[in-house]
Image (tube, rainbow, N blue to C red):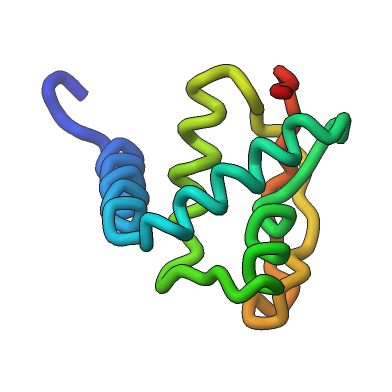
Length: 113
């Protein structure tokens, strides 16, 4: 495949662009609050977590965003900083609107204080 972009590469690029766009349009208060929630998880001593551990507490406090996929950008940034890593584990989503869809389990690599 000299010089050709594979379908997989195109899909990965489209996914990354969508995540960036969703993050760019997310409410700034939601972004700050989601970041604080992630820091709380990192400092808690827990070994693993899911995006639900960020989204559910925010939703319970009435802090919502138009597109919850924005949490993906936060998690990707934390992964790039070496704070967390993906696992090969999935669990079911606790948020009713996701109908128990599978979600990734993340591992804490570096604790924050």
